[in-house]
Image 1 (cartoon, rainbow, N blue to C red):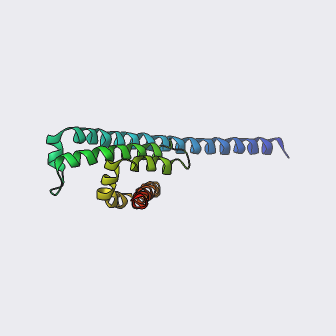
Image 2 (cartoon, one colour; image 1 turned 90 degrees about the horizontal axis):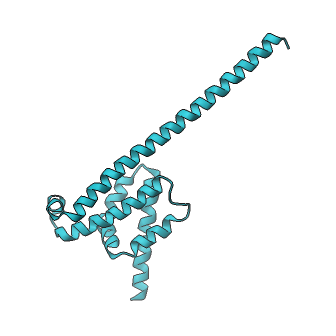
Image 3 (spheres, helix red, strand yellow; image 1 turned 30 degrees about the horizontal axis):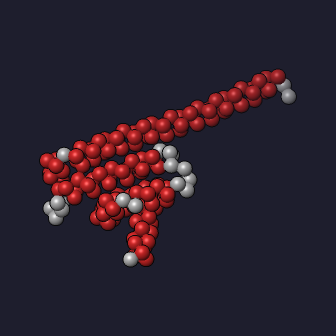
Length: 155
């Protein structure tokens, strides 16, 4: 092999490696930006839920017509807890296999079960097309049903 051919081949290999590293870096930067965006949007939602679950005047503006404002505020607080778990899950802070445990802990709470009974179908509709959100919703739904079955057997 001629020296010029070897130099060209080495240069091409270096260029290819640089391009691959650059592409990986761009993908990683895009993923991190998406995670930051998701955290900001979730923070806005959690702030709104915190305000709504503690301020009856605000909650009155948004409460369904067939629901008492106090009940609505309690359900919003439950939603806040569920949204916090959802964010932790989406950002990868919930280890594999731990989501059913956390979902079960949430469904041990009467207010979380009442929230899920009222708004669980809405959350399932919101999750459609988002594989991770669909999985999260399915796990919470299973935890709610499991709690109902335990209550039924105990009664």
